[in-house]
Length: 240
Image 1 (cartoon, rainbow, N blue to C red):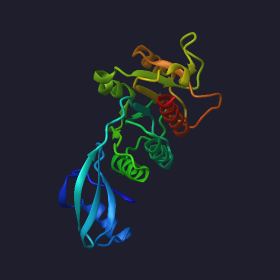
Image 2: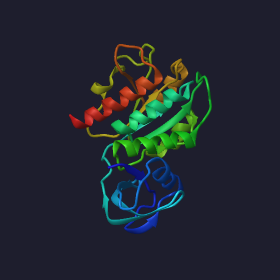
Image 3: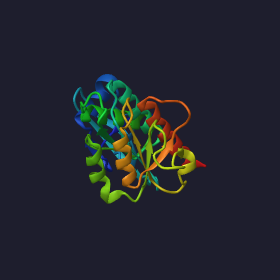
């Protein structure tokens, strides 16, 4: 069953959001009587039956709304968008499929292209949520500088912070593999730098904020690959 995103999902009859109505009628070519899976991105899921179908408007009926619990432990990725935005969008898509709670794009000293595409990036998240049948839409924060990200996260820093970088360790014995450093029952924040990596001063800044240096393996990974590897490792740890 295909899925549609309905932020104000409820029991009863209502019109789909305009974008989803256009997509359903023009692309998916739904007909009266067709059933779709509806999700609101905050745990609500339901089966919706199309009552009326027009080019720009669709009326659906929901008889039962189910609420799915949010994962007890979640992952926040602090990651520098790549120079070529399609690579960053690839990461966003795959991260949603695997499972992620929050994405904080950051501009660092070595970021090559500082162009935010918030609406486009959020659409990628929504599309991936629908495709993967996940009931919770990850939170996408507005892009900011690395220090600003820590001001935003300051009140939520109960999660452990991990720093993935390609330099030699700054703290003796402080660069273990992520899987060895990560406890199974705690939320985490992982910081991934740009193509040119974090600068030493940026790593030292994050260490001063309680960050722990980690390795994601022996290979030198692209930003989007490293970020996705961290997501996969975190999800795997929760299942072990």
